[in-house]
Image (cartoon, rainbow, N blue to C red; front, side, top):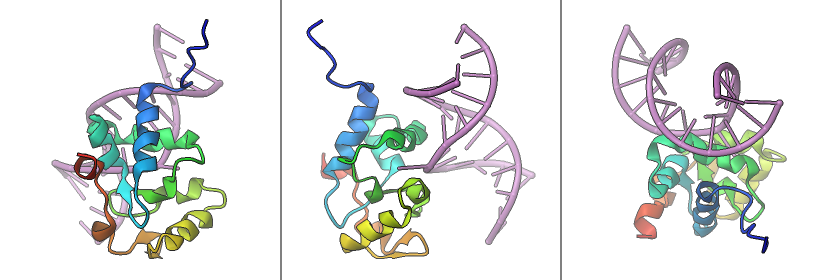
Length: 113
DNA sequence: TTTGTGACCAAAG
DNA sequence: TCTTTGGCCACAA
């Protein structure tokens, strides 16, 4: 069959990765924002769950929850890796939270508009 | 097929 | 203020 395997995962996951990769450096976004961009704002959980298989191509460390809290950092390996990456992006992280989150906030539905 | 869970969000007590 | 509950979608067993 002509190897139609473009992606082992559904389009939904693929979109999540696509947007995640589009996140500019020094910027962060929220699961809900990505979900909203994909049109499934109600299922923001899926965005996070999609990150469960987050490829290395996807900077999941730039994706945080609505509060700018690094909820998913515990899923990183090691968890401190996420904060390290964020700091490297010139993003300050204090108490597992992104400093000036709203300033660093990057809304795909707006930037990619 | 059914059930359970998950890195969320928002509302209500 | 904090905790609990409801919802929504997709995937794994």
